[in-house]
Image (tube, rainbow, N blue to C red; front, side):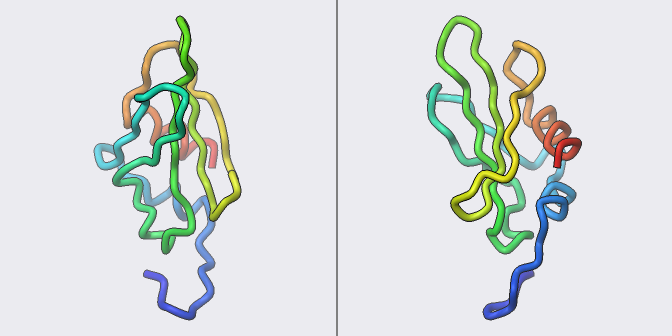
Length: 98
């Protein structure tokens, strides 16, 4: 928990370590829009970090994930494979890349 007035020292590694399999929900529709994740434990970083996902439009969509700190993207990647990833797939990939 981050106390009011205290400097938030949470890192992206702290944020990713607190992600729990079976807890986070990542959204892909509508295509072409960044959508905020639900249950990604953003509160454990005092709201400093949050995750967004986006599916590109077209015949072969690309599934992208980014972690945002304030108004700055600190991590961005495309999910491997062509099928829509499960929530646990996203958590696993995010933990590996953070």
